[in-house]
Amino acid sequence: MATGLEQRPIEEDEEEEALVEEKREEEEEAPSHLPLAPSSSELFDVSTTVDPSYIISLIRRLLPSNSSVEKQCQGGDDKDSSVQASEMNYLEQNLRNKLTATQVLEDLVSDKSLADSHEGKLDDRIISPENSLASSKGNGMNHEFGKEERSRGFDDGQSGVAETKDPWEDCGCTLWDLSASRTQAEFMVNNFILEVLLANMHVSKSSRMTEICLGIIGNLACHEVLSNAIVSTSGLIETVVEQLFLDDSACLSETFRLLAAGLQGSGSISWAEALLHDQILLRVLWIVGNTLNPTLLEKSIEFLLAIIDTQEVATILIQPLMKLGLPELVVSLLACEINKSGDDSKLERSSILDLVLRLVETLSVINNCSQVISSNEELFHLVCRVVKLPDKFEAASTCVSAVVVIANLLVDMQHLISELSHDFLFLQGLLDILPLVSYDLQARNALWCILARLLAHIQESDISISTLRQFVSLFLEKSYLIEEDLEGHPMDNLVEDLENSNAHKKSD
Image (cartoon, rainbow, N blue to C red):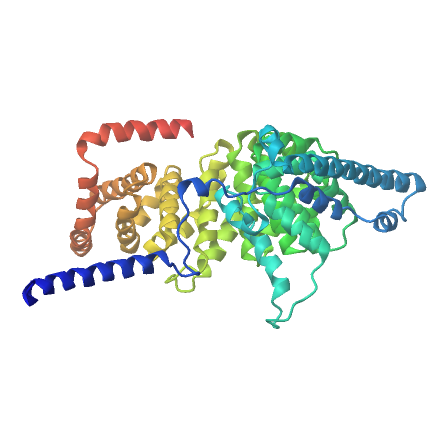
């Protein structure tokens, strides 16, 4: 017969087992809003296929109507009108044939018994339209400006009230998203998307329609495999260049983005030659110098950087741009961006200033441009103001670019070293930038080169005791920055760093 002492452990064990079982049941009953993670095999079973017939139907919906084509051609002769209308009929008939063929093929593939045999024949795996924006970031395609503009139609101060959206715009935006994928972009080009977009730009009276067309082509141009198809589309490059004379900032932003992509592709020469007219280049410089739209300014400066960075394009366009006033424009831009910081305590648009400094840096090492840039003392003093800004870490890349530019300019402006050697704010700012250039070999060498020039001049010149004390006090105050930089770059690596730096300069 069991005693009470023997029964108690048995009861405790039963209670513990009941608690464990209850806890296990709670874990298995996961809440609906927090589903269990799928297994690794299930992750690869998720379908990311976009129906090919869906894409073709979207392209068909972008076709200009016959009435629109006829209106556009009313000012011309009947021959031109009939030719343009026949082109539309040809495109529509081909798209209809492709749509029918695609639907038949899908009906076959939908049969599970035939699905495996066709798996390798259909190269249409891609993200869904709902997730296409996330995919565009992963593919390096940036059309955030288009996304921002698209969203404005849904919120006009009346949240919760659904507004009627233009079907053409809806289809165009979906294709804009899908064109970020190389697979879908190739499929679109094979199904006359370029011809359809070109036809729309010819007849478009809506800036929004033009923006969407340019945005889609801009994404297509980012895929190197499609460069030849874009260049070989008759009249496309000329039509895109004509959009530079529009007044809509969104259209101009997408135009510059498209042109920058085209200049960096295999068809860069064709794009450069289309831009080689004084009227066009003057228009570009006017837009860069007068726009108040930050996005447009960024895209236009990136376009200029694309010209300079591509050697074949620079050979064609850089000299005409220099003659038409590019150096003066750069100085004006730099002064404008620095002055917008008010008392230099804060940079309002550091990303734009960084782009301008990159433009100056690139121009300062080009053979035919360096003398023009280096002879501009106003530009030099403006760049020095960047070094004196107090909040270095908020504009780290800007300060690093400024150091490289100053080092390049001092090669031809040695008479300004005397002025800088007595500018304690500049010297203090230079030392504060040391941590920012620690991992940038070129910028670090540039900074130490500037310091060496300044210190050499101080030794050679006669300075007062008070000035000498200021120098000593400054270097004592910033000695920890110098010590950290030297400890991070041992002398054993000095020769290797110098060799790498010299090799980098020769390559430039």
